[in-house]
Length: 189
Length: 235
Image (tube, rainbow over all chains, first blue to last red):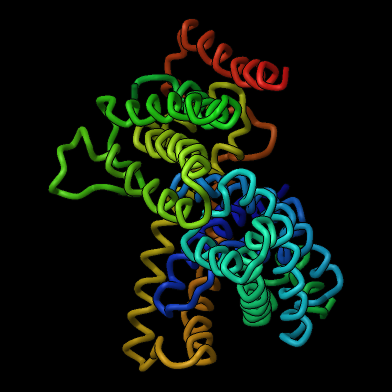
């Protein structure tokens, strides 16, 4: 791994964690905690993306220990984003947003068993409340847990993909060309 | 406790939650939660990098315990909302063990000592760099995000209204933050190259943390206790 890609990993991880905090300023129910993972993958490939996801989870764990078991989700997000970057799906919002919505479903399916078995579906307040809503609607425990994860992940991953698409297009071509996957991700190479 | 080798601190913080999940509930999880909460009272623990629980009204010795209790409390509320009382107690004690162990770890473990220990143990300097650089970059980017939010508000950005206007506000906050962070990558890469950080090169530590034989043995005992407890449960 080149020094530039090594330097990208902590920056991308810090972007995820800083955005998670900044999103409070606009009062939107989003996490954006996979932004750095998706961005690093789109810029530099799956190894850098996975490393960013693992570092993000490890550092996030120091703030909230319940994040660590979900490191698997970060790895899946990185692999999925790599597929999207290879196919050039960050070329426009019209292609990126549906891919983000599909990732929301995959992330919910992946995180539901972890959330259910390890935490009894109480990982964050928002997910716990939507799980309670699912339970009140008559869903079985695992179904209610999936409902909670799905509601939180579905929109979050679509917004994250749209945000990464904006960043990739706003990046000067000279800067983008320094990263091996950036131009292919936006469909110009 | 803070003078323990960083690997010993990590092993304790990792083994306690593992044992909480493996040992039969609620007795096993109650025991591990009690140990973890007592650890938060050990001398030398400070609120740590995150600054959680640092408020003037609390005695210094109780700050870490308070942070652990405040972090664990919402889980108990939500568990009670979703489950019956026996399940709430079983899962709640396990989550409390996990929360208290990690809050204590953050308070007791200095990142610089961990990096020294990793390099002294033969880990790649690159791996040590990843964690240390992220820990220092997060507060810096959070402060920058705050400045960007204030600057955008001065230019008339409003975080109110419908979802579309909030998303536009998010874009106006996130784009400058992410682009400025990406422009720093080259500077960081140059600094790393200047300091000779290349893959495969072993570095010498200035003051590697002392790692006595007793601690190494205790780490192995703790690490072996987790699979042993799992086998005992399965049989």
